[in-house]
Length: 340
Image 1 (cartoon, rainbow, N blue to C red):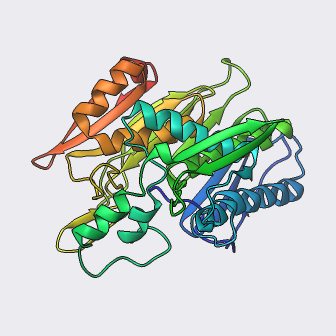
Image 2 (tube, rainbow, N blue to C red):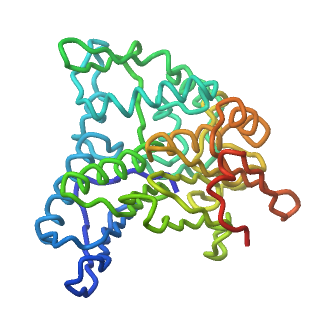
C-alpha cells in the first residue's frame, strides 16, 4: 500500500526484543505510524538502543515535516498552498526525491506524476474522505489541467535547491516515493552509527545491507497479490539492494466498482487493468519505489517493454480469470530464490 506518513503526530511504538550481549545477536526495532509501519533488523554492535531510537524518531519526524501530504505545515504542503509561482527553497533531500520523480516520470511517459495531488484528493486517497459518488467528468477534466510534470522545476544556485511551479494551483503528492526515501534515509542513519548489517522495511519498500558477501544474503518475500491471505509468492535474496512492491490488492474501496489508489495521470481515473503487482529491485529504495508505481500504472504490456528497455530488475504479476501469471526480467532473475 502506497501511503506516506499521514499525520504530524506520530503514534510511535517501539518494541525491542530481549537480547544477549553477543556481538552477532540480532536486534529488532518496530515503529507504528498512522498510514504505514517501519521495521529495522540489525546486528547488535553494542549500540545504545535508547539513543538510537530517539535518533530514529527525530529523523522520522523531520522527514514527515518535509514530505507529508497530510501534514498541513509540512514543507510540501506549504508549497502546495502557495499561490505564487516564485521559486521556493527546499532541502537537498526534498530535491533528491523530486528530481528522481521527474526523471522516472519522463521514462514512464509521465505515468509516475507527482503533480497528481488534486486527482488523489478528488478520489479520496489524500487527506479528504472518499467520495460518495463517482467524481463528475468535468471535475476530473479540471484536475487534469493541473496535472503535468512540465509544471514543476527544480533549480540549484549556490548549493541551494529551489522548487518552482508554473501553475499556482498545482498540488504535489510525494506518497509514491516517500516510503522508499525514508527507508534509504534510515539506512544512512544506521551507517553513520556504524551498523553495517541490517534490513529496513517502510511500507512496501525494503532496503538491505550486509558487510560483505561472506555474510548470508537477506531473504525477502514478495506477498501473493491478494488481501484474502498473507502468503509468500516469490522470495529473493539481496546483498546491499532495495526492493519495492506496488499493487492493487490493499489500498482500495468500492463505489459501485473497485476503486484502487493508483490514479492514471493521463485519464484522471484509477487504473483498471490486469496488472496486480509490480516489484522492482534497485540500488536504492527511492529508485525502486518510483519505478514500481510508474510501471504499475502503465499496465502489463507497457511495463514489460520499459523494463526490457531500461534493463530493470522487475517482477510483474497479472491476473487473468482468477489465475496469476508472472513475468520476471533477466535482471530480476539473478535475485530469484524460489517460486512457491
